[in-house]
Image (tube, rainbow, N blue to C red; front, side, top):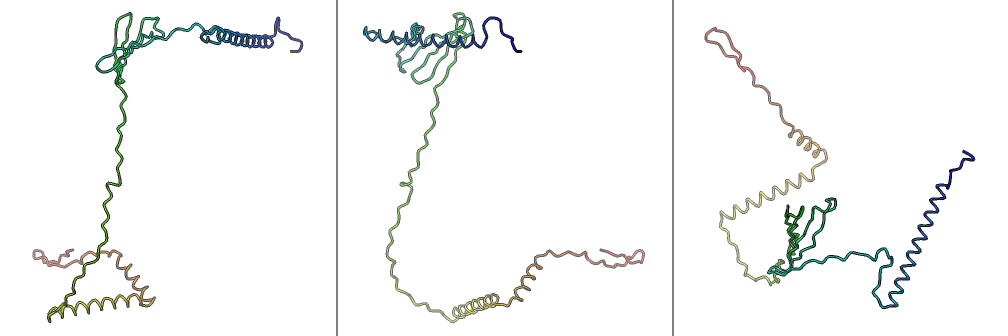
Length: 222
């Protein structure tokens, strides 16, 4: 609406003024931290935190080290569980092998104790060495020189040898003729081969006529 104004300060202007004030305060805080550090270096004092708000820090509680036969056992400080109003505390006891015990206290009394074993290491698989598995190559040697012996056949062995030679020659000639046969013969052979693979239909046996000796009539049997 034209002419309408917010009573008092405008919310846009007030938000901008707040942001400007926060940025100025941040710059002043940084400048103050620089001055404190410069003064500490000049006085040979330990370096302080940049911001005076972070100078008050709680000291970290140290672990209690207990030496035993297994090594050094660390007893962690007691921690209060958040949201329990200080009634529940947890304490960790860490052993040298990496396992831990967790003790849980409620109102000063131990109510639970859990054991966490150490992390299991993955078993390393030994790599196979191929050099040991490869067999040694046999060096080539010269062929032995044996004297050739003359083969002597009697009449019966010679006849068997001739028969086998003749049979082998016939098979070779038949294969050669089959390879060089005309195209028409090849087509007819292919058709016969296909037809021979078609399963044949079995026909029912023909009925027989048998004379009935009781009635004197003829019976047809299948």
